[in-house]
Amino acid sequence: MTTILISPEQVGPLRASLLAQREQHGEDVAAAGPFAATAAERLAGIEAVLAELPPASPGGNDVPVPVSGPPDVLFSALYDVVGQAAEQVQEECLEYWRGTPPEAVRAAIARLAAWFELLAGLGPPPAGR
Image (cartoon, rainbow, N blue to C red; front, side, top):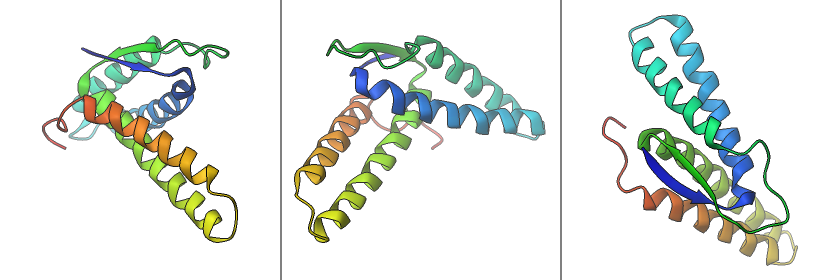
């Protein structure tokens, strides 16, 4: 198990990534194909991380939220969120190009950097990726 500390604002995006992965791995288990056993193990790890998350983003404070789970599950979920944050930077840059102030781009870059630091803090990608 690995533990990361996320900000209260990061709870929602991390949960959304885990829920999407849970759906995909659930479909793999239901298909009972050659990867069903691996998917079932992964699904158990996803459920364990989801159980660690508070029910909603704790508002009004900056106290980090500890989240523990299998490193490969955390890596995959964070990787997905980093990709989404990168897409948000791209969208904000397009809006900047269209004439909006640069603050939204800076905020999106800061969010991307925060997510990437969490991902990089886990170390290299897990084997088999």
